[in-house]
Image (cartoon, rainbow, N blue to C red; front, side, top):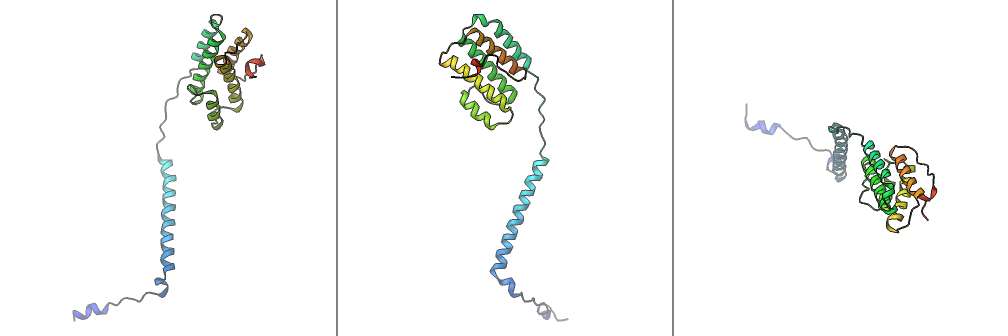
Length: 180
């Protein structure tokens, strides 16, 4: 056996002409990019399904606490001015909405809250509209120093209680829920 002819026996096959075309190389690169993109897209979808979902324990229902605070406010209604009552009612409802619907409302203006709530679907449209009218009325009493009759003050408390209980708020005195 001749050791030098061993290497000469192996010959390379000639490459076909299409293999040298730049279009083939461009297609191969684009194919690899597409394959990598589809693979990463699939992996992201799959990885999202595989992530463990952290289950938070259910938060206890705080509605009775808010109703108790409202009852205390109702008991002190005769001692409070319309201004003080509007501040406390507004603060109570803002705190409730923040807890119940997970909307940051406590330190926002009414307009800021309504703009943010319009994009959120956790609160029904009727609830959001009613709450907007309620807070605007409170704003008139607080900032414009518009007075409120005893009937309007009682209606303010009744409407807040109905909202806290989750019922449909139907105003008995339209003056409370309409702004001039």
